[in-house]
Each structure stands twice: as C-alpha cells, then as structure tokens.
Image (cartoon, rainbow, N blue to C red; front, side):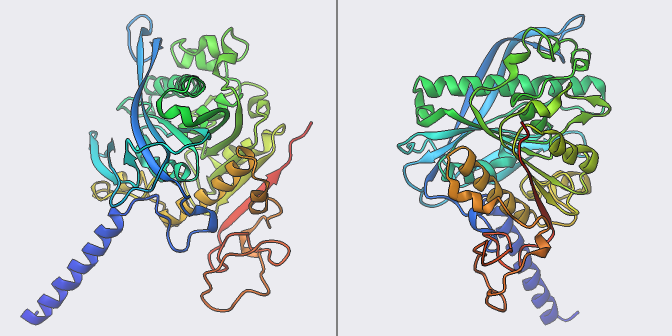
Length: 439
C-alpha cells in the first residue's frame, strides 16, 4: 500500500467512524426522515426530573432466610413532562447500565432532548406509567418518554432494580414477578395522589386520565394493573409475597390501577418458564382499550401462543395488534450504544436482526400517539390512523400518489388504502388488526 493510498483509506475510515458515532450520539427521540406522520415530536418542550418513591413495609422475596424480609421499597422514578419552551442546545445525557455478557453491568450514556428541571407547561396533561422490561432501565425507553412528553403527557417511569442474576432461576424470577405488579400499582397510585394534591410537576397531571405502557416484563405488570387477575401459583413462586394479591385473595383488587383509559403492551410476558401469570379469565377481565405490539419472531414471550393469544383472549375490550413481521423481542429499546456493541450478547439486548431500530421506534411512536390521543385525550380525529386499515400493510394502494421517491404521507381512506400517515414506499412488513369489545 502506498502512502497516498494509506492516507485515503485512513480518511475514509475516520469519516465512517465519525458518521457512526454521530448517529449513535443523536437522541433516540428524534425520528428519522422516513418516520410516519405521528412519530414527529410535539409542540411542547421536554422537562425531566428524578424522584424517589418509597413503599413502606414491603416484603422482598429476594431477602430473608426463613421468610421474606420486610422493609421500605425505594423506587427511583424518571419523570418526563411537557415544558414551557423547547430547550436550546443539547439536552441531558442519561447515564445508565445493563448487564453484560461478562456478568457485570456495562455503563453507557443515552443522549436526550429533555432539560432537567425545566419549567412545566401550563395545563392538565394525561398521566402515563411507563414500565420497562427485565434488567432494563427507564433510560432505554427514553425515546418514548420524551416523545410523549413533547405531545402533552406526563410520563412516570419507575426503575424496578431487578436483581443482577439470570431470570432463568426460580430464585431470580421471584423478584420481578413480585415487583412489577406491586411497583406499578404503588407508583401509579402515588403519582395520582400527587397529581390530585397539586404537588410539584405532578400538578400538571390529570389523574383521571391515566394510561399504562409496559414492555416485556413491564407488559406483564401493566396488564395486571389493568385488571388481569394473578394466578394463585405466583404465591409460591414469590415466597408468598404475592399471596394476598392473587385471584380471590383479600388484596387482589389493590393491584388494579384506577382511572385507566388505555393500555399499551409491547411484547408482554404471559408465561414465564412454565409459570402462568394470570388466572381465569385472564386478560378477558380488562375493559380498557389495549394496543398490543410484537414481532412475529419473538421467541422470548411467543407470538402465536403468546401475544397473539392475549390479543384474542381480551374479548371485553376494544384492542389492536401491531405486528412487525420477522422482528424479534428487542423492539422497544433504543439502538445499541457503542459500549454495548463489543459482543454479540451485549448488542442483542438492543438490536433486531431484520429491522432498523430507528424504524421500529418511529412506527411504534406513531401508533402509540394515535392510540393514546384518541382514547385518553378524546381526539376522535386520530381514529383515522387506527380504524379501517388493511390488515397487511403490503396490500395498501394509493392510485393518485406521485411517482418516485415521494415523501408525502398517505391521506388514508377513501383516497388511499396505504396506512394513513405513512409514506408510500415505507409501509411494508407489518400487520395491524382490530377486534371490538364483546358484551
């Protein structure tokens, strides 16, 4: 290799590295240029705050020899909220960590748009509880928290602090099985209490309009909080911590969150290594409108025998099912940060084998926005983005669409059967289905 050739190669490599780093450093909440219409950020600035909720006298199945130890459960909470004005310059940089292949946590940063301590916007905004998956953190769902805050939602994301041991052991499973429903019920009730009493940023939240969003193990938590009764077998699986809360027990009703207007369950768990999570009637007990989101190749929670079955069984609620064909389980997390790209195991937390991660996030933001705006805010115009869509996205037609690389959005019916709000060349590989509530 000549000196000139070496210099050219080095410059090209540096440019590629710089480009990759630049993309990695962009806030995940910023939608790509090919994002569907409703993925765009809203008109509010974004504020963020870190709080600590304390559930006093909670039994911990992972502590204590003869019986679970009882103590105060500290739950860190990330709060995203509509701010008065959009911040100038860079927003915050979230610092977090996920378990790595070598057994220890891998720390990394996530660029954000939110401004810590920004003045809250005036108004009354719906309250959203955002529940992450096993061994995840709120920061890896920042794309959704920030997106919704910019659109006029107060988003409360608890950090469940899962144990740093594999979920494949019964001892490890006891922690998240108990903490998800108990934490979500407590955090929702506490956030609603603060909203009703006008405390701090919560004064802008409307407790009477609450939505629940959960991913993976968080999906199990929010479906329980929406009314699905816990299976009695979870009493033994959690060292009796959930015994008072299983179906038919004295505190079973305490897990249901009040004033829930909508539920979003992304790749929700329904059976954990042979342990069923809900008793009859299961999700059929839920009445709130529900949006299920899943990949057809999700081998963690299952598709046909997992999420699609939940969609079929939730017969007393109007519900939707968004399927990313060929996608797997990691559809809700941000793209892998540089620190998590050094091994396949670490990268697999985040990245899908088939789908671009920014594409997955944008499509989910679009449908979650339409779903919440309609069912929580009462914006009936958003129904056009949800109802009457051709089930297979590939089959939509738009006879009058401009030719070529047209970036405009489909107007929807009657002019087009391409999904409303999608660009004509960017609407393949998905299914969207609806079932009305039965009496």
